[in-house]
Image (cartoon, rainbow, N blue to C red):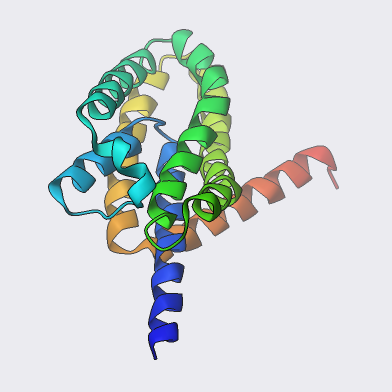
Length: 193
């Protein structure tokens, strides 16, 4: 029975890791800020090696980075430059947040390896979908819709974070559907029938 409980806790940690990493695909720093705040308040357990995420310095850095990211994303032209930089930052943030959650049920090396293996791709899928949507919106509206889309992404990131904490398996399922939709869309674009 104890082994079953450990396996269930590991599965929950893995689902939570994937779900929180997906949030980083929309906003790199916001899920790290929220996770650090919740860990500091005792509502989210992170691995012992990741306690620094709730330190004063980390929370201040995440808060400033979140504010800069959310503000810059609403400025036409700057939002596209930010998207290019975020292609690296968001998967890295996803890997870090995934590793921190997996770290509560695993040793540090395994949690880092799993964090990279599941966190980076989980953040990259929403980032890719967001980039495709932004490119289409820029083409159709000359970038005028991008600030509104950015605000919707802010709200979605916070909502996704909350859902990730409450029902991580639902977020993982939605992420799987998103990945399938992106794959089908790319396949259709690459080889039109």
